[in-house]
Image (spheres, helix red, strand yellow):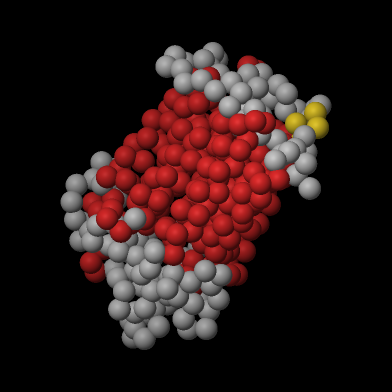
Length: 355
């Protein structure tokens, strides 16, 4: 299995890193509303957050974790692609992933949590473990050509309309990354300035299920990975860079659809022992977020379509073998996977998430 990776230790490291990521992804997509109350009230959570009713994080931010799960699912698909297709030239996936998870570890570290501390440091430990395994795999895969073609260019190498779509998408992603990393308090409605319009100022203190600034910073760390991938395509060109283009396309698709589909479902949050429970999530940012992610999704689909003209699918493989008919990916595989993910989101929003 996964014979494209020759180094067994690297394969094990990648496999374990993937396992950590996919478990958290499944937990957040399907069970975040139970996870934030530590699995209380007889609801199921794959990984409870460990919070008690005395913790500020208790009952907060299920919707934000749900979106984080979709982003993590996209990142995990990159690890699966490497396992399935081999390591050669996959620095385009691995370096952005390392950058994102390094930022995640920093954000989760107690000195950087600010006034919004987590109930425990288990997510930090899991992140450090997954990151350590991933970096170890990257080092071991150097002998298998993971750094082939490694280059950091300043110029723009995309030649057709794809460059404008990737540039605009990257600008939007960068703005949200900066805002969510450095102005999370203001965006969450906890007070302070914000670059982008978020929740009403002071709403964090009156809404017991509002997302914490810390969880918003967590989202930003995943944006780091995807923005980095977009910049790699922009500065290195499309030719033969199908692995990073695929991960970016799927990751943005999963992220966008999780927000759009999630906004159709009103999942009330139960807080055991609270007489005013259940609480309805604040939907004041739903329309703006749906419009923005819809634009970003269309930009990325258009960019991939135009990059096909520049040879992005050159050398594409499936299971390590030549994938001869490239139309099968864009017109069959991508729509099929997208449709399957929509079904999973509908299950998450209308079956497993509601309490």
